[in-house]
Length: 145
Image 1 (tube, rainbow, N blue to C red):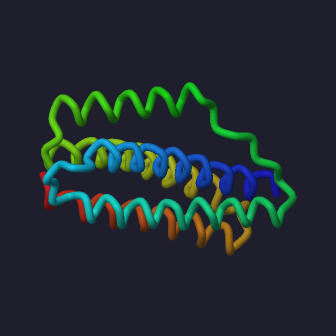
Image 2 (image 1 turned 90 degrees about the horizontal axis):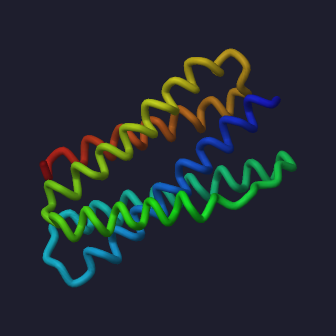
């Protein structure tokens, strides 16, 4: 049971930080002529969907979520702003997103491997769907490199 909650919390936290960072990127790209914007907005919608689903599943399980730390969000926001300021080309934005999504993707893949024997089937499927979503995003971003 504990690993089900840990997996859901991980997906929630990853989706929350990704949603926050991507929203910051979209704000910083506003008014600029980037072809990647629509792809980034679609990725954001997907992360928001997983964020809400994980939140709902945790709520159903009676798990209370603590808010993500302000420092992590500030660091993410500053990092995005710095990168956009330095080079807001589609290739640079795709590279930044690929690096972030790859880190989350590797981590969820490890968790799936380590927890799969102890997870409820629906939680395992949810985690695998999240992983596949991340892999699809990586593929969609490669065309901008």
